[in-house]
Amino acid sequence: MLTLLSGVAARLYWTARYIERVEDTVRLVSAYHHLIMDIPKGSEPGWDVLIRILDAEPDFHSRFRAANEQNVLRYLLADADVHCGIPYAVRAARENVRTTRDVLPEEAWEYVNELYLYCKEHAERSVGRRNRHAFLQGVLGRCQRMNGLINTTLSRDHAAGFLKIGQLIERSDMATRVLDVGVVDIVEREGAFAAIDAILWGAQLQALSAQVAYRRQIGPIVERAPVIGFVFKERTHPRSVAFCLKGMRQELAILRNNDESMRLADRARRRLSRFDPESMSPAQIHAFIDKFQVLLNDISESISRTWFLSE
Image 1 (cartoon, rainbow, N blue to C red):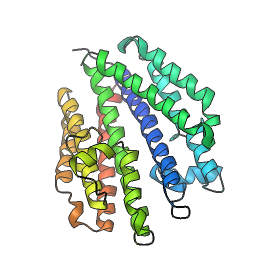
Image 2 (image 1 turned 30 degrees about the vertical axis):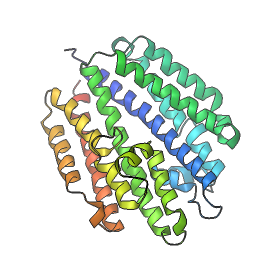
Image 3 (image 1 turned 180 degrees about the horizontal axis):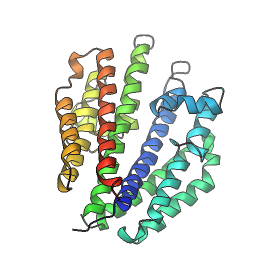
Image 4 (image 1 turned 90 degrees about the vertical axis):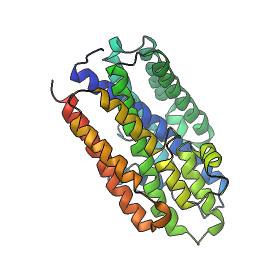
């Protein structure tokens, strides 16, 4: 099996995290964009919910006074220096691919460079509603093209393993962020606009590309506890936390010196197995998600200490 230098392993891991971050941010913005079109005026959550999901409030407010639509979208879609924004993540992914081209499929550089040039040309115009949907779909399609290339042409060695681990860490982190803020924001509003609660929880599913899967597994009724349970515990859905943890553990098991990371991954899976949103209050769910996010961060730091800092 191919042995990687720790620096190469780190860049592959972060390539996958950045590509997944771009894709997840696109899904998040797109879901909210559609939500405000479907929901009665005056009942929609504020645009600042996107900033809170990405834990970027201090940085955002250092740049903008008001968290309105234009400012939030400019922050996430057009500002090249915003670490949680799309242009920054695309540029970082491109740089990591540039320095790992010899272990990736030949077309990987072409695909990520095309994504970079597309964002550079169209991001500024995407802030307005006229061009936003086309831009988001263009970015999403190019991310999926990159992922498809890796999934169908890269040998299943350590390079593929670190790419997969990075993707799954980022995906599970975003899922917990979306639901954590959703629990607080939607529950605070429950009853005030009772008729749209299902629309709000449906938007959470849409942000995680889980609407169709939820309907097939759970049914047409969209409520808080079933949505949270599905996103966290549905083992068959590729964007659930349980699915991500299982895949992460499978890749970690192949690596040497994996004791710490495997122990943390197993702790996360045990904690998840005891999670029952049906019997928990919103405050308890919020507390659980906060602690779980800390555990995901611990896994990421363990991976970095074990395999990326030893060179």
